[in-house]
Image (tube, rainbow, N blue to C red):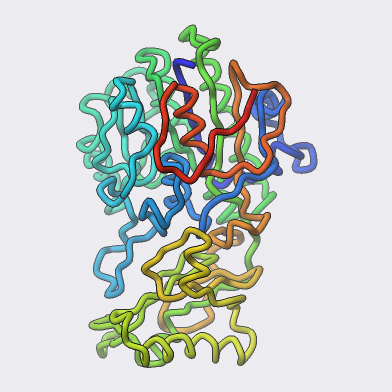
Length: 423
């Protein structure tokens, strides 16, 4: 192969293409990829099953424990960082496959991909936002390949209307990829589109809105296939379609930080602002990490664990289990966390501190143990050298990077993933 295009459809559940008729989905392009390519009925995501940890694992071939992007949100125990996420390439501890490709002299493109602010690539547009206002577009433009967004806007008149930081439409994201495939022929291109995730969060699994978002994403796959053909690269290009996690319906939201505040482990002033902490929680919907300011304080360790154990014993806590550091490590999670809480089915963890039970903001979410079948991710390969109609058994997201590298004649060293057998 001379070219590989990787596109993630954030939150796409494998059942969408395994049983599309059961969901009433009109997805001719994903159906084609299943019939003429290789597909997984459910690829293992990462712990926790979140967008930023999973996307970094897709691109690096290692779990969050190794690459360092252990949650979406940055750890901010005093709530001073304006709800920042882990946007920055500097926080990734290992090479990603486009780093290996660029070092080998290949032309690379990384488009709206998580954790890439400051990334080196031939063409680059990071996923980033700050104020969540139109002014953020100027910031993205400054962080991207000079002149690139303007060139895309000239080629696609509707691009600017859809290019909104934290709300980039799937069409606008695909505009960037189509522009590069047809004009620049990058050897390796990574694109993240995410409207399926948003629709399932806010409207629920199998909602009309979720089905419409999946069909919109399918049309983007068709646009990529057409661009590859238009560029005359069909016999030289493999298309990889993946997601980062699955989804589960929820009906309750509980706030673990309320318990820490009630126990005096969070120091709050009269206005409710945090001014100190001994233990802090970083919720990620299905999982919440708990950190200690002084991990060597045995009394603090015991007190913090009892806060959650006592709540579980009282019943109706929404907490399914408490994972210790060994269990977190076995799942490839954050080695710096003291414990991790996993939510019960139908429950997710929120960020509030004023009360334990909160009104749910979502109808469905993710972040749970990746071994839960509902959290399994999508994975499909299509192109020359891929056996038509074949199934990819026991696939994992960490297998994507070494497999893509192998297709380009490269090797990812010291990875946890393996090269998948696709022919």
